[in-house]
Amino acid sequence: MRAFVTSTVFAFAIALGASALAADKAEKPAKAEKAPKADKKGGEVTLSGEMVCGKCTLHETTKCQNVLKVTDAGKETKYYLAQNDVAKSNHEHVCSAPEKATVKGTVSEDGGKKVLTASEIKFEK
Image (cartoon, rainbow, N blue to C red; front, side):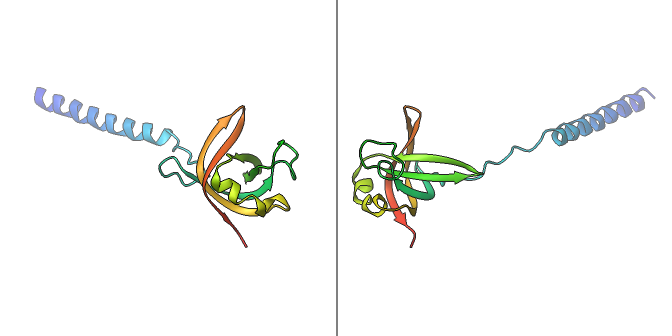
């Protein structure tokens, strides 16, 4: 009789533990996935938006500089392109008028501004 009671209590404890575990998993909300803003490979991101001149269009820089304006969920973020060969060779596209562009590169921050060091720039036609 004692073995029967022990095995019944043991079975009940296992069932109770399993249902508590299932309830615990059900109560935890799934982690919200962030909308993929960029394709990250080796620290590089790919961002698309409107590229403009920081001096001529935005009047925010003292020298001509590419700025990529990206809108995500109604919020605009400006990425100031670092002055490397890729950015300099593609500046004439945007100095006179904004153009839609996709830029691949690495993002950092400098003085509260996002700086994008471009490795590749493609303009939409």
